[in-house]
Length: 204
Image (cartoon, rainbow, N blue to C red; front, side):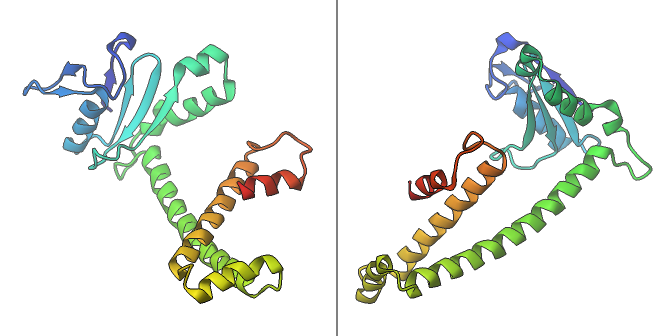
């Protein structure tokens, strides 16, 4: 597995502060390793580290949208974050890169599993967003609440186009998704805060 080490003083991992390769072209340490992984069929994983930050890279044909896992070593060791260190140990242990009979390692299996899970989650999310748009849109237009008369009037008069109405619904749905995800991770409120705080966030 290729390993690129740079000193902390050399700057950011994405900053082209040095010339690498025979052509003398200035490359950032990240791009240097990424180009190597893309060109070398025998290596699909690589590690980049400057003593403070460490990245795990995979063969990726797109240099415009880099994909990597970054670990803040200075934060983990500086604050004694044991749980984060345990994740780092599990992820980058030497056994994760041992090849099986098919020439694949444990990281390859995790990557494939993550891609499959992401596709399934994306499909479920798409269906859920569509269902939420239909339910909310029909509710706003059909519910007898006086507050719903104004959007109905604007739609009937053409003042509000159906596309603009759709965009507003989509914005509301994604706001709810964001809030639900943040709340699930206990990132919104301290314990004991009631549902009224949720209403204030949705109305923002």
